[in-house]
Length: 221
Image (cartoon, rainbow, N blue to C red):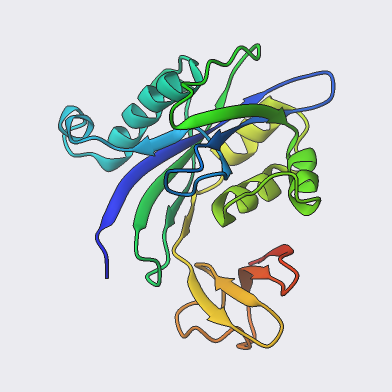
């Protein structure tokens, strides 16, 4: 089992006349997850753990503030951040991350990408981003897809922040199972998560990847 790489990412939210939009960055195709559209973020550096007194959550906030400035030219402060979720890459992957996800509000839309790791950016409503995925216009990783799906009901930034500030952050370490109908990512809280049995009756928290490539997120706890 590969060692987990600590990292952090932030979903930047802004209000627009067309509803709440999120910032997506397109990664350089020559690096890990190249070509995918992602949220700003990256590895937590050793000096950030040191500055945080080895408090992982605090270190993650320091990292995401730094990375957002480097990748998007947007300045955040720690009080801006709402802890949203924590993802651990499945054990079947050769390179694994332990990633803290945050939400943060921003005003305006001025973005400055670095042209190195990041090659493009777009502001999308969660609905439009998911439509673009279905139409094959953009590529998303499962945590990004799930995050956008969770944000889909919200059209106002303040409402999204209030809702997720009051909710316990989701802790997700997928167990991946292949069935005749789909690849099933079993998430924490799903009845079949621990035993890796998607047929076990009970609560559902999972992502289904159909043969055609379509995804379906099920959250029924």
